[in-house]
Length: 178
Image (cartoon, rainbow, N blue to C red):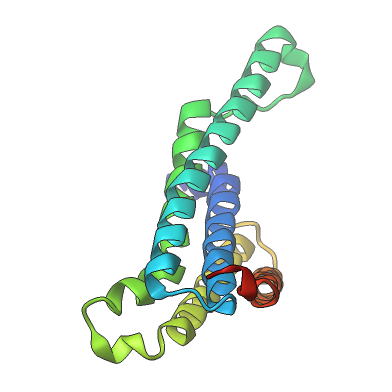
């Protein structure tokens, strides 16, 4: 029972941070591949995005939760729920973002030392990313007691659309890289 309460308490941070980490990192990967950039550039941009955007999201989450907590202290009647810890919410968001956001980069990292992975690293990245979307979406559905498959597919669809957009923007702007 206690574990389920913790899962639900930080579900929004896990879903928000995890999905955004996957989407933004894979968008960097897809956009870079669409633009014809090298694997080294994909890794540089991917890791820069992973930590900078993860930090940005964590700080934004912290400030948001801190504002809610301050408002709650002044006006306890506004909500019957006690606000979450701003620090714990920020840490949960950052952790989810970085862990889940690393998934699209795994094949590019492995390709550095495993030549067999090198030829298909974008394909592997796409497959791993799709699995991550399905996992996060399914977990969200399970915890909020909604249809798991529907929730998983919805998350995959939304992430897939973002990736397609990034790929085609990179493709259209590929002449600028040079």
